[in-house]
Picture: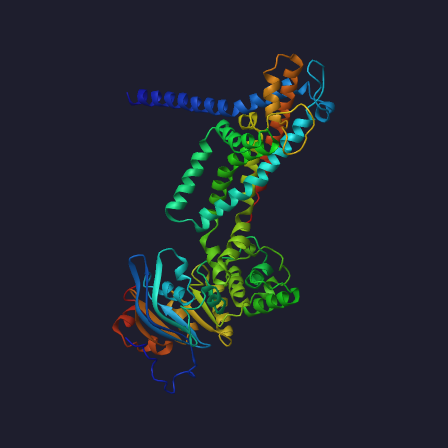
Amino acid sequence: MRPMSLPAESSATPKAMPIAMSVRDLRASYGAASVLKDVNLEVRERTVTAIIGPSGCGKSTLIRCLNRMHEAIPGATCDGDILLGDRNALALDPVLLRREVGMVFQRPNPFPTMTIAQNVAAGLVLNGVCDHAVLAETVEKSLRRAALWDEVKDKLDAPGVGLSGGQQQRLCIARALAVEPRVLLLDEPCSALDPIATGRIEELLLQIKDQLTVVIVTHNMQQAARVSEYTVFMLMGEMVEYGLTRQMFTKPTDKRTEDYITGRFG
Amino acid sequence: MNDLVYARRKKVNALMFALTAVCATLASGTLLAILGYIAWKGGSSLSWSFLVNLPKPVGEHGGGIANAIVGSAKVVGLAGVLGIPVGVSAGVYLAEYGRGKYAFSVRYAADIMNGVPSIVVGLFAYALIVHPMKKFSALSGSVALAFIMVPIVLRNTEEFLRLVPGTIREAALALGVPRWKVTLFVILPTAGRGIMTGALLALARVAGETAPLIFTAFGNRFADNGWLNPIATLPHTIYTYAISPYEDWHNQAWAAALILMAFVLVVNVTARLWLRPRLT
């Protein structure tokens, strides 16, 4: 099966960006249980791509393959091709790949022993950057990009786990942005947050997508409609439909997509 | 009829409740009884000069146990230096990397080691160090105590590392940090307090061990004379003095026991207080 091509770039299409990551014939499994079946996908640069689908459809597995966090789970395997630009992501050192393809998880997970500033700087410090001026600048810049600076600028030395859930999640986004990734993966980043905190995160996603590519897994279809240009609909390990968000939510081509977004199942 | 059954049940309940309460008192009361008795018996012989003087020659009244206090500190200290890094590293291996049969057997061996009688460990250190060197020594005592510490520290380290949520590990890996740095700079510090508490408790535990020191550190009535010579330790001094025929030595044994108990108690309480205040 060839990569599912994007819908024709008609006048309604946003300016087509170059491809940041592409996935070809990706299969993934946990031990004997296969969770992804021949997924094909192209992620456009500096856009937000949402992955939707019912629980257990393989959404999380798919984005965890993109930065190879999938293989960190014992017994998990994947094969197929994943390209980052024109490089084969599966042949890169996963440690180096993850510096270019960052990730934010479902539950906020700041490092419990570190302060707010240390959390943001962690990626740099742990990779050997020790210039204080550089670190301080990165901390401020990343917190600003994550729309958290104004709330924490006076307590950078307070523990990161002392923040509220929504602030912690933005702290985690700042931490991921600090290593300057080209792609940012978010695995249901708002599922543990209230609507106000969710709104802040959606806002900041719309801001940062000018500088990097965002892929977001979400359970919330309104969220996908609000933040993304492209949407992927997955069902039982298969990619059912992939296209412009606007199109998918107004006139889906596949019956199953229509059933899902109109709430007939899932 | 029903009322009778109910009244009987109430009586049985009261009786059983009283029994459990009595047993609980017995269990905790033992500690108080030991502490009280030792304080009462040892307190009278305890004095500053007892702490800072060397033992007097046999038959002479007075003298102190300064050499045993220094000796215990040295032997237990070196045991910690030898045993804690091995235990912590092995615990890291089991929690972070160990899979399959090898990890299973290491864990199993550690559990068995925990149950090996300490005098057997002493014999092992004797065969390993004392016999080849043809000399009792502080070093061999430390090695024996280190052998006892390793499995305790190992299992404790593993437990506390397992308490670190997997999401913390993932967060660090997703930043493009190599696995070894994640373990060393993120996971270990997160579990650090628990690991250190465990190490302290292990130190307190071996500080009171007597059997492994009988034919390793051996004991000495003179001032400490280096790592490769026999050395006096508190538990061994208590043992020697307690089985001696002299009244004066009996009193000194009680006083030494009081010091040892106080040390173990202080370390225990410190360790537990240290563990308590946690963030999150």
